[in-house]
Length: 225
Ligand code: DC
Image (cartoon, rainbow, N blue to C red):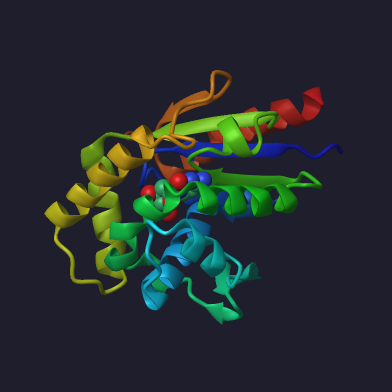
């Protein structure tokens, strides 16, 4: 059976990685949340005090970062220079800075290069902001996820609280709104829906309903190939 590339883009906290993982597992494909890669780079920059406005320092720092994914019983975990940073990259400290880091052209160039290598042999579900527009403009299936800002803030808030983080709903809402604004207005690869993407608004869908819809689309595309 021919393998395809599935690109999932959309706004912050729309459940892109949940869908990518479920699709990957159902199809036997790899799944990669590219937001985790930008978050891991952000964590490195925070730890080492890398000045974001110094392209040479940014390039030098990028050359020191090695990212890998490890699949375990709880899904993919990202390793940075051999250290599991999956939990740390979800902190508000990283969330508050990641959009600024992801707007740096040197950072994007390096992440896109690594993402294309991961998808070289197809059979991959990748989620992010620019997967269908920049990383894989020829992806056989592109999905653009959205949901109302209230629903997104509530979902992310509950997720963070469940992890024991001390945040307020208002703080989470402001962070989501700020990230949407920076991600959609940045000069390099802004978040936008590809012309040939399928739009899914999941405000009123259960994860299972959303997966069924996406799986039907994926199976139809795989048969067409
Ligand atoms: O999907 P996420 O919320 O974990 O992504 C974190 C940030 O990374 C998000 O604010 C925008 C950025 N990002 C990006 O610019 N391009 C991608 N392909 C993925 C994420």
